[in-house]
Image (cartoon, rainbow, N blue to C red; front, side, top):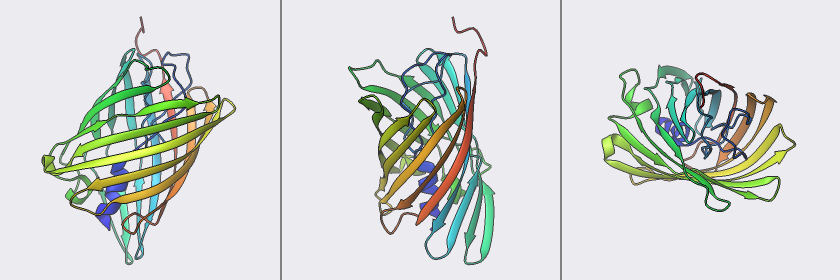
Length: 258
């Protein structure tokens, strides 16, 4: 189902085990998982996160999208602006192919909250904007507000638990929806992180979508990262399987941080 494929791509993104937010910290991305990081990018830094994803849908359907670009700009010490660029989508169904470009993705602000004991969290308030370039089955009608609460808790030296409840008002606010992710991360040395994740999408208009997700990220340098991830659906209405990869980088000192 095309709408099922869109909802999975639209749904979620990543968390890495890091708490620093200054220019000397390593890159901390919103990918490749579907749970956002609760950490904002450093003030005066621009982070560019890119990737691609292929989904196998039942009854011979498939879907490919690129570039999955999200731009994150550090405005203040604990505040960032983030925007998702339009995606190119290629659908395959029963030997036929179709393609299109989505509208502009989520545009909003992330505010990192004060740490409560070992809990780190942030609030993301954003919206999907119908910019006129996307097809309705890819983007949906009207402005769609989105509220997310990414959070993380360290579990010893190498492990971290992350989660992100999200509330969406689809179809110009007429279709309230809820998303939930939960993820366990493990760091392997300084450069590598791996994770296992659950994700669910729930709305009144459609059956629930549940999936399992696995992936890894590797820091080529402290400011450059590659990732690889895959997953599969846990119920009939979810995509059968999906596979993706990406590259992210950060540019610091766009303006003085102090």
